[in-house]
Length: 74
Image (cartoon, rainbow, N blue to C red):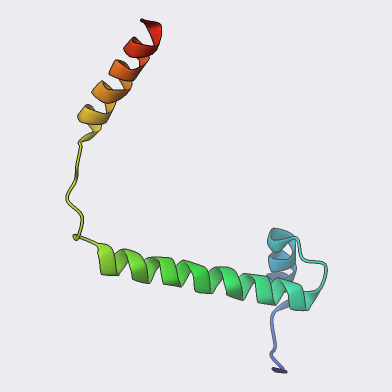
């Protein structure tokens, strides 16, 4: 789809730098794809928030890792 938009030069130059795009079009498309992906992840996070029970605490994980190290030594 062709669309004409006025993007400030500095914003577009920065987008090209961070996306490593060779063209303005590539920079805009990449930036929009990344933005859309981030929004989908946020939506998923909101949807799943509170649906999982914490299976282990940080302390449980630390103990498990220490046990694994001990088993490797023996």
